[in-house]
Image (cartoon, rainbow, N blue to C red; front, side):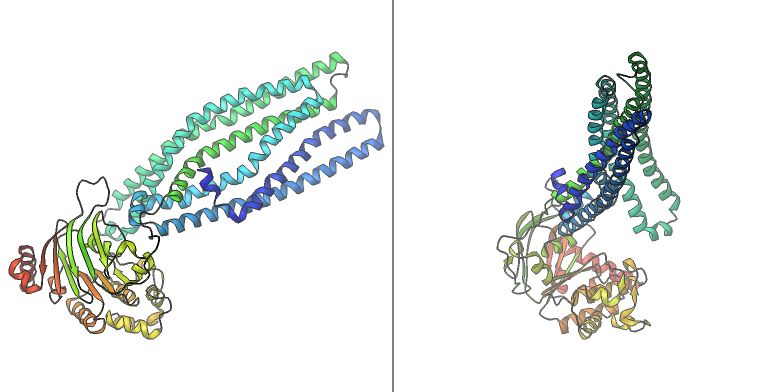
Length: 577
């Protein structure tokens, strides 16, 4: 995990190295101060003014240098930690962009969001502590113990004896708390999923007046997180009073034994200055242990997040470019050769089973079938959003696995079942299809998709701002904008996945007519629920349970295919009423 995460430090390696160096100098200055203070106290009794002046100068120099090194350490720690977090988020985001649908399904969208936000924030905080406080605490501990032995070996042993006792107590606390923090972050995913699902489906929630149900569902998820966090934090809370007890106990012991030694030896073995410096070193030693305990508590929270981040960073996309990819798609011919597909290797049933289908370049193909018949799954294989489990799929006479992924997807335009528009102007959204599209090309694509008629009615026309998700346009308008966006790519294959369901039959017919006249060489696959949307297609494929139930023209299927007949009769009956 550490090896994977450290790759994201990159250009922030120098600040990460400078921070502990400055911390080291800061600690040395702080450890010299008590020693110089004890010398000053002892020299006050001898009235050696000149020596006292030099000691005071030394104190001032150490204090100023300690302040400077502390400032520099804080500055570079902030730069390194925030930069590391920025790189981590960037690496995670870029990695997710390369994931296949299968990879995303494995983690879930809510879990990926948690990893990029909460988990990375915890790692940022921990990294800042590691390069600064985690260096400062052990250095302070070591230097303070060394200086304690310089001042009084006998008294230093008392301080040293406290270290293993505190260490054992702290180890027990961490051992109990660690598993609980692992559990909490898994429940964070469930909480984020609940929030994400609610916001995405807020219109449905309000339509069905299910606000109270959603509140209860959220409260349950939030309570689960709270309960586990409460138990973990309760255990960790024992850390502070334990440390404070150890500090006060050590101070009392040092004071009592120090005073005893001073009286018994007449100031030879122990004097006021040395006793004072020992008390300061004792506080520094035990404060260092307290800081170390806080670091380990923070790290125990971050380790769970670090593992989750590393899981994403080491995940390899299930879809990869071949060693020598093909960079040109000859034409829009599509051929399924005994293709079978399942979403998971452990799945008992195939989503698609033994598909054999040949589609000539430029043909218009309708795809019809009931819910769950795997219509969308079939077309997802063409642009290689998933790979076939068995058999072979050819585009332009070449296996899709032999193509460069970008090349293939640039030539296969897909208008998804769930139409997605992004926040920005209409023209910004359309240029997702082609970044350098001219105004003339954009207007032509919108004309083919019958989108120009409503765009021209907007006051700002093509500069009209689209809200996130396209919430300020109707479902039919959204579909037509998505079709225009796909057409701008000038693809060899155009797939419409139930993409005209929200437009009226007249507009649907106009769109299909425009396709036939203006893009005759583009292979067009139209998934539809309405027979009227595909009845003039060159070929209609009827799917049932992931298998091809029939292939033919409208008239042929009407005469021979039972499923097609039933759909046609039901729709016509509804139309007659």
